[in-house]
Image (cartoon, rainbow, N blue to C red; front, side, top):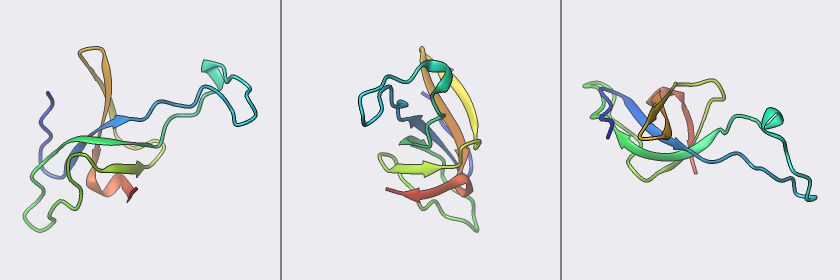
Length: 88
C-alpha cells in the first residue's frame, strides 16, 4: 500500500457514471474525470498544518488535482490536503 508523506492523501476515485438519468449510455471518450472519492491513506500532516481529513472520508477534489498512480491494477490519486475542496 502507498504511505503518503507530509500533508498528502491517497484517494480511491469514484467510478464515472456510465449512464445518464434518462437512460442513455455514455461512451468512454465522453466521460468526465471523477471529482470525488474515498481517502484510503493519509500522511501525518505538517508541524504547522494538522490533517483535517482521515481515512474513510468521502471527499470532493479539484478536477485536475493530484497525480494518478496505479498499484496492483487499481487506480489511485495522490493529492495535497489543500487540493481537497470538501468532505461529503
